[in-house]
Length: 355
Ligand code: SF4
Image 1 (cartoon, rainbow, N blue to C red):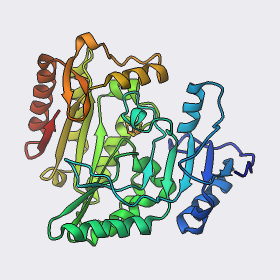
Image 2 (image 1 turned 90 degrees about the horizontal axis):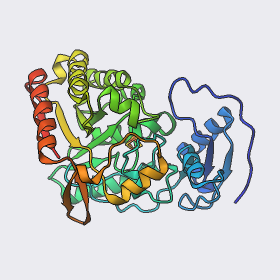
Image 3 (image 1 turned 135 degrees about the vertical axis):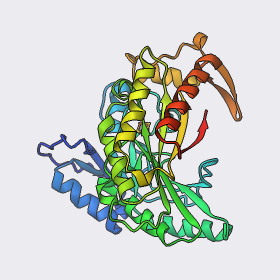
């Protein structure tokens, strides 16, 4: 592994756009236009960079403790080639997960990537988009004339990375031309400006993950603010994209009714009228596994996230380890309050599920 590191000038972070502290490149990634563009960007920004033989083997990140290494990993970008072009399934919201990136720079305390990504929490962007699109084309043909849906946010937040990768633009334009292909992704970021003029043909649905101000402030560090996400949703709706909202995780706290009431009202104020007839909501109450609780307590030792097993109901999991959700009385109160508020403000919308 080369150790070429250059000194970087000060970087303006006020835009909240992700600027990594360190970038790794697989040498072959530089043979692709996207890899070369990101390389030039890193040099121009003065970000230290290194070469690596594989995006799966990033070792020796700076940091004395496990926690320091974790934080550094979240600020490390790895630019590589996606070799596995067999897509994972992504039921029930889509047939397949389309892999354009892995990992996320944000620090949502409850994020499931903390357990699923294990020892590789660094952020990876894949540059061989044409190979990925060819594979998607194959999956679409296989199921044709059935429609095939692809989810682009299973292992990352692609909008957060879009200013660096530009990959969503390519996916959206590709899917616009697929009579039997659809794209979906979910985000907690607001970097949508470069997506507004992409021809999408209504084939991409963007869902914004929103929450009360309290939840965003306390549990979602390094994501876009409440107002930024709502403004971005309005922009995407204005550009004709079908949109939706995922309210997740819905958290029970002292002022939850006021917080979630304020959220639905803010959505109502911001959303253009013609975006409301094809609007979806997905509602997910906070849950955790025993493994996740252990990881979260180590990585965010001062978190206010309530994870007392005695206060929760155990829900058996299909694949082994079960989850702790709210007891029925609390879950029902959350579901009823939110459903009532949503239908009051958005009578034509569809609540896809509460889980
Ligand atoms: Fe996880 Fe999404 Fe938060 Fe990123 S923005 S840390 S993917 S929950």
